[in-house]
Length: 172
Image 1: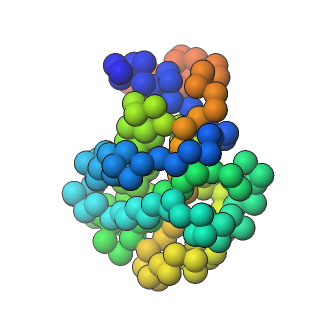
Image 2: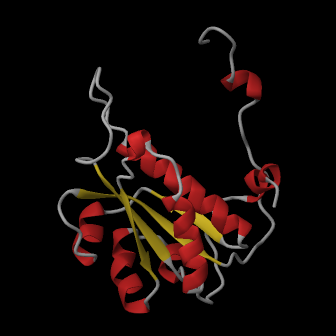
Image 3: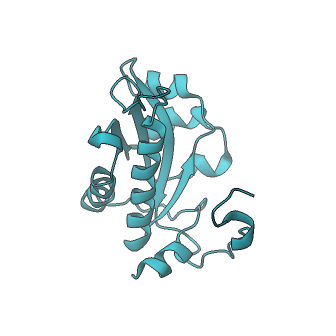
């Protein structure tokens, strides 16, 4: 799929077929994230694929939405702020930015493979850490649902006009 078409096709999927995504396809998706750029090449990320029903059931009370209770697979994405690059002038931590780039690579690869994804950030991080036995330095940054979408036609994207977000030579 050409990139312009891929950008138009990718959307947040909240209804999936029950069939599981194969592990080779999941590996392709994670590999796209692994290849993403990161500040100073620190790669401060880890990805946990949750595709077993028992573990999925445990995770469901970390994000209490009806549609989440039936997703076939979740990728939990973690960042380590102790290893992420910090800007020398003000110590701004770029871990979240690096992880976001990796997630974007994952969601676009999933779309190319005919899969749907939804990027979730509103979850109970303490439960994710407990259920997945995550070491203290690793922060759960996002949950990515992944599977075969029920509706393969993407909804119309509602975005601001280019003139509202792009300026030349000065901020407006």
